[in-house]
Amino acid sequence: MTVFPMSSPPPLAVPPIVNPHQAATVGAPRKAVALISGGLDSMLAARLILDQGIHVEGINFYTGFCVEGHTHAIRHHERAKPKRNNALWTAEQLGIKLHIIDVIEEYKDVVINPKHGYGANLNPCLDCKGFMVRKAREWMEQHGFDFIITGEVLGQRPMSQRRDTMPVVARESGAFDRLLRPLCARLLPETLPEREGWVDRHKLLEFNGRSRKPQMALAEKYGFQEYAQPAGGCCFLTNQQYSHKLADMWATRGSKQYEFDDIMLLKVGRHLRPRPHFKLIVARDDGENNFLDGYRKRFIHLHATSHEGPLALIDGTANDEDIELAARLTARFGKGREAETVILTVTDTAGNSRELKVAPMPANNIPPEWYL
Amino acid sequence: MTHFVLDARQLLCPLPVIRAQNRVAELSPGDTLEVQATDPGALHDIPAWCRVHGHEVLETRQEGHEVIVRLRVVA
Image (tube, rainbow over all chains, first blue to last red):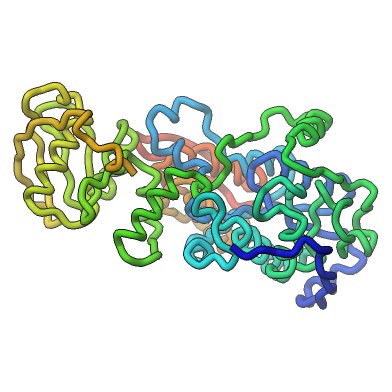
């Protein structure tokens, strides 16, 4: 990972107005585009700027790794909980428009080739923030907006929200001093909206560090009660187990590439790799069964017929011996796990099915390292 | 005023919302759009998106595993 010096950040020049639409807004109410994640910080940042009479619209990027929604949509037991998209909910609370942008394809380069490296897992947080601010900057220019706001707090995140890396985001995104972080702006050099008097710097904040108490106090002041507090963050790439599965996929394929379906499948089911040349994806409940069912034609797949049990997909190449091993594992996760034998149907990618009778594999015969 | 249908089945949220948003951007005020989805989240997310953008939700319903949201584009 690149190490940045702890000296003062370099001065960030005011870029020229690149869009004639922006020039036309002189004298009109200033407009800010706010990165809205669905969490509390971006909600507070947007509210602070709304309170200064700025027209704010939200932007939210869908990378494919967003935790938002998916687990909820797939896993059966999660469906009992009330469902909402937190970014949309935030926008509704704030009374602003929200534009959700599909960046799945463009985001691959961020994940595969992060200039600044990964964090504790396969999370390219600094590159990710730079990418999102750059996309917001492009949107700002296309739509005649004046500046960008984020909910970043100095010192809150180990990669992207440090005093030395915040200027990197501003510079590499091309946003320069049109990027305003209202929650910690008073700890940072003045930005264009402050210098020009579009916003009053004295009404901005100086939040610093990992404590959430100042945000919670401000939320209480504003009467925000139901804001999202994702315990594991909003991105699967910060999840150790997910990153392990992604690393395993890259290692076994011999290249750091992925398609959208790959990263979706990594979110679903138990993943076991009993042999280097194949892994097994086993549904954990009805919701995952339904989800994997949509993919079954692309994989050799198995399900028990003598007992209730999960659908399992074989990802990779498998000979008869491998398929029998996969069948024993699949039987292990069904209601026939204690039975002497379980009958399964195995279907290949051409749609040809056959029956297989196997003994379920005892739990203690499954080496822990098979679980990804 | 024209009626359009968008097939967003087999997509997980927020993709049905994104597809609806992008389709609405191509339509004219008064046009109606029926979004068909299979992610139950679309039942709430698409109306929420309509509310923040000022579009009118005409109907939401579930038919088996399918979710239908009909909306009218407002200027």
